[in-house]
Image: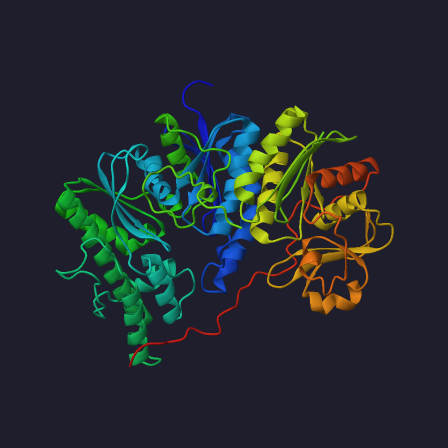
Length: 354
Length: 222
């Protein structure tokens, strides 16, 4: 088979087990299994439950992705895997599978930074990213504003991050306060449809003139919801609270993202991650980008949440850029900062741990 | 041609066995590096044995019990190898491998106990009638709670060595951690006798530590 190799991407950094197949920027097939239902009763992801679920899901998910693409294991020409950041035990499951497939198939292995995967997800739907572009990653674990040039080659400039809770985490916690189910994001989105987004004036954290321009903070918003609930006793109007909270989150996210595009002269904003599926975040981003003459790109929801296809997409870029493969003793880095799309930690060489 | 490995003890151990004898073995002890070192170790034993992957006819893997993250590395690796090579994966209780190795290293002819470190001041353990015959299911317990059941028995493994006040018959000449060579030899004997193997799934013996929240507490300044 000529041309670029088919890349198998494996993702297991949190509660989704994903496998995807990508070649030359095209998604050939993918599959995702989630242990979310097992975590719901705990109100959040339990790392050990997630790790155990990955063990059971990994083989079937790889097979399902191959079936989706109409391919066999022998068609795989490279393997890419999330090596961080994420839950350590969960990352190790994906890495062990990826190493084993790469080794037994005799193909190169690439370690991928999870957030770079989210960035690349959009290329599978809308084609290559322009250089430069602004990327807003919003999920249950991350809220980051990134200035991206050539994803496979250049360092990624991290303009800002959340100082405390991620936006999705804020939705989860607020949902619990409002008596809505986990995960909170979709539940708040649904409840907000019946509410008035102007009913409650929730704060817009870090939006003052002296604040860090591209940093985020959402733990105070959660507290504001709690105060509101407490002040009203049992008589809380859930729809209004959900709509007002969603408005505050969407306002802060999109205002900062558009301001960053303006400051850096970037014409394209990409919004990715699970919270990109939020209807108000999407609508407000579209409105503000249109007003500012910025092209907005948002991948479809199935590529916004964690999946293997986005990791394969980064692997495909790395392969085609001639990036070096990972060594066989590559490890994971659960708290890796985003510097490059490729992530090949070998931590034990730095310090022998007894 | 069997490829065997086990990551349920602090050892990262792999071996190649041709049905008659061990062709190569490599064992390193580093409880925090299973994820990094297993594949290089597998690669090393295959090279040393001069065995190509397509000659491997079965994967033997220790299914634990053992600390979870390391244990999972071995089982996920075994499953992917089995899938990619199209060969069966034979699960063997990790303690059985240590018992078998103890029988080779020491003349244990009567009953004995194998115990590994389960962390949290507990041990994974089982009793054996002889080095090939386990007579209790593997269990996880505080040493003090099983003192009556293991007192005076010859004892093997790092879990026994950690708690000599309970495991009073620790055998210094027996192996402390797992050896994939012993695991492979044991599996080879079992295959020849047509015995059943365990499914290649982790033997955790504990439920995940997680508490269902009773209710969300509202904690904030007045």
